[in-house]
Amino acid sequence: MEDFVVKEGRILKCGFTTGSCATGAAKACAEMLLTDKTVAGIAIDTPKGIRLNLQVEGIIKQQGWVSCAVTKDAGDDPDVTHGIRISARVEKIKNGILIEGGEGVGRVTRKGLACAVGEAAINPVPRRMITEALMETALKYSYKGGFSVLISAENGEEVAKKTFNPRLGITGGISILGTSGIVEPMSEKALIDTIHVEINSRLAEKQENLLISPGNYGRDFALKRFGLDLEKGIKCSNFIGETIDYSVYMNVKNILLIGHAGKLCKIAGGIMNTHSRTADCRCEIFTAHAALAGASGEIIRRMMEAITTEEMDDILQEAGLALKVYKSMMSKIEYHLNQRAAGKTRVEVIMFTAQGSCYGTAGADKLIEMLLRENTGS
Picture (cartoon, rainbow, N blue to C red):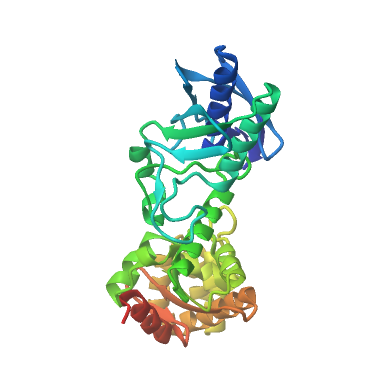
């Protein structure tokens, strides 16, 4: 496979998923099991329509079963599972196709994920890919029986510690993933899919109110200031708009968004993806609200020349305009978030600064109380 994408002016090589690796290994095992010939390479079709030619490694042939492996190639994506070996062990059974997870493949312990509690973390699309590849192979050789498939991941338990799996309640290894079979470099979709999974998990635990924060700053602040544990919430990274959209779709009642002013100030400009490469107009937003608050021309000039949110905050504190400016910004943040939620999900916000100041929307305090009761079960 030589498939590429262009991102930020660079040509980046695509890779293939752990699901494609598992499919290739299982199909190669079935070929060898039914022909008694060694297979050095195997071709599979991915849901994206790209045909992959995969190298087969670590072949073991025994009476009644065959095992082999395919090594994950994530292309130019910074994927922690790049280079991991995904193995399949396939044997004949009377009928049907049974797929199970072996060493290094995680097991689901919480509701709301794509796999049921107790199942191996082999997601539905990879399961379908494996099943279809084995059915195709059986048809090719006029085999009428079934297959038992055991999927394993070399060093999967260690690699999983660098993924979201422990947070999602998947223990003992990695997940076998992929909806397209192909890994696109620096894929935003993978992060958004993880946010969706986290929301599903919280709802499956009967949470009606969600605590959301872009990252660690919000987590630490929420815990120290309010006693709210973001480990029971959602880390949405820069994808605030996507998180709200999916929450609305899933009929979430209330959201409390907690974040640093450097991120959340952008929402006051209607920006719902807060990554700096998407939009970085912090100075412009702060300066516009400072002007509305009556800042002098000199203050406005200094604000526009500021480099960091902290520097802008210092200027506002010095001018005695901080409270007025932050209240003005919070009003616009609340407006844009409620526009995004279309009145279907209530969104309250807490925005804090590095200096420890904290500003919230009108209903934030009440929602904090609700979240604390929900998290403690009282």
